[in-house]
Image (cartoon, rainbow, N blue to C red; front, side, top):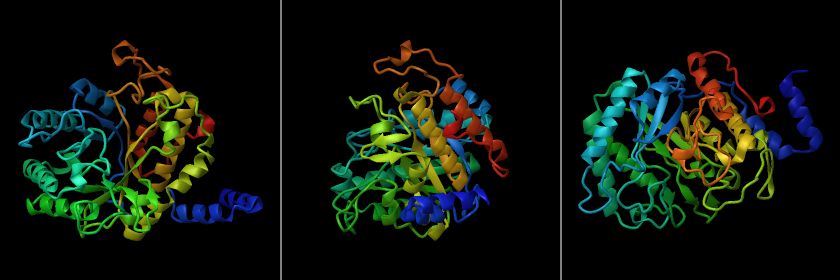
Length: 384
């Protein structure tokens, strides 16, 4: 009996009919074969503009083929009046691009924070950006500047990430300042009007659907209406369940284990695959590449966090999705070089290493970039 038949039979025995149906939907196509194969696959990492050439060189040696540069700590556009372009931070971007060209790494440009957003790490439903249309003009101005500056950069730039973690307040309103679908369409049109033909990354927007149901970033793909453009990538971020991935951060409870019961549900690799069902269905329906632009787990999760990451990367690779781990040499909470498993360790006092369990794990998956057209050799949670 084939392994898949044994798996299906075991599901029947347990009476898990709904899980069976979803698993069949998820694995209806062959592993490692994305429907839209003209973008990626990329297996990369998030970095901040503070990274230096040594950091980029180290990434290149680990077979990383993409970085997503998140300008949260160095906004590309000033967030105070008169909201002008930040030339100093664009100079940082230019330097990083030159290093990436030298070490053969492609780049996703992610402004991450813009005028009209209160936090530098994400957007909130109550941000001015979603309340008044005039904030959209600043975002249009920024992307017009980027398109003019980099339209001739060629394949060095893998894509433009329009807005990091958009929020859609008031149940995905149509036609107003809170309409992420409309704003994304405007930004795509702006970039194309400058003659820029790079791939454009559209993230899903957390919020509510029209029935009032709260959606996370995986479920929210059902509300995404893509602009009419041939070179779009759909991006999701994966930090589910938050109680586990963000433990020890901002006072969250420590000691949450994976696999295990978390927030009233049992989480293991099968549960993680099921959470991806809406994204997988959207990918197949629209024949669009999928990019997991961020995923990670706090180092305070210890070996459990490493098992979680191994299961996620195995799932992403089986689906043929591109991904970027969050993050490298930015915060010790996420940095795989830091083995410290307790809160309160200032980064400058922590000893880094490229031989931590997490770094070894990531390097194993990044090495797959050499062989992405062949069968993957991946680690699973059972091997950690």
